[in-house]
Length: 219
Image 1: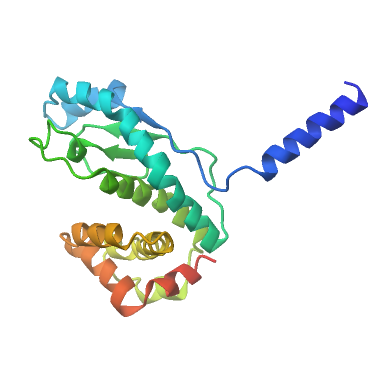
Image 2: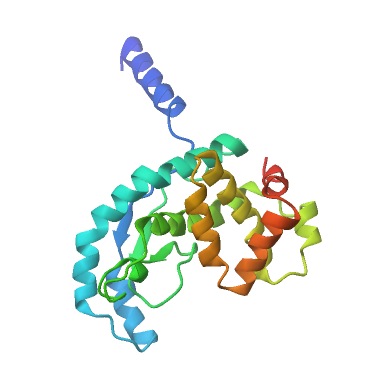
């Protein structure tokens, strides 16, 4: 390669790296094969084929909602903590399996967001964005938080569902407040609070320590 051409390529690579987003792309895929198909066997349940048809037709709507409303949450997270995500891309598998959404493997149950499984009463798309953000934050916090912190020590005897959501909930609150999306945050907290461990985690973040204390431990 000629010296000038080599220099041009190097500059292009450096420019691309310099302007790369410090948070990941989040594409959604449909996990029918093999995950959902095997799920029917090990959960001994039947997934209505019409649910698959509806999901396939709605994937673009899920993706558009995330690109519009979810990516800014990731951007706000990195801007405040000054710590980038450890991945350039995080692929989310959408499933109709009757399981909870989870971060490892990265699965989001979309049954609550489809007409068929909810008898025409799906949850709002903003809550889907919140679900995805929640699962991504599990992976983010693991990398951003030191293994031992004063607050982790203080709450070490709490139920795992409480202590492992403290920093996560704090970052979630920080991001939503930064974007002035208080109503969405309130709706998420109200929904989470139906489950006692999640309710306690939010209580500690909101009313005992304050979310800023947990966020500082990530900086």
